[in-house]
Length: 298
Image (cartoon, rainbow, N blue to C red; front, side):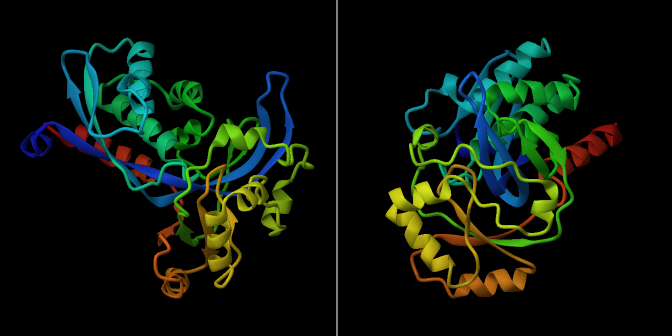
């Protein structure tokens, strides 16, 4: 697809925000083998961008590179579009382009957020008319992290991550770092040293600032020297944490100035950047703007 085509009429651009897990505990395992989790999802004002264009022939195509080794039909965004099309009995199709900023395997939720953005945006662009609950049900079939992006609120999560309760979080800025390690989620869940029976935390524990930790942190730090090196560097400027089951690390600050000052002291060559914590999802703000413009259009 040429640059002229990509810049042509019919395309719309939608944000796919990243997330952080402010803590992550594994409290047990279901009979079907899935682990029971507790976490708080924090959405960020940083992430990928999704470009979409409605097609009239019913085809779903993703243009540009996908995850290495993943066929187009198995791509999570393509699956999301096809599942929405089937669930809503839509005849139209879509072209999909993903402008990636979120590193794969970092625990920042890039693939899940991309899929959620496709669901939410195509529901609007196609006029499918599904409610958020219906979209969240489709999202859960794609992955446990996808519903939080569809719902668009910072949330306390339990179950396998799908039981969501919106939470108000204070303003915060984050120093993020990518060790460049693609953490193998399935292998980490099988790790014999992983703590799978942590006592359940409470909202009061979280609000009080109790150190709730991330179950995957000691496993990854022991297995991946690059992750341990990033923790050592970030420890010079604050209290680093791991996000999700990925290799991404972060330190929380109250202000942008504090986060940027800490960034400036990190050693050269470390991939690190600053992002603001979101109070509401950038995707849902974009949807509100699109809806307002669509209503106002003649």
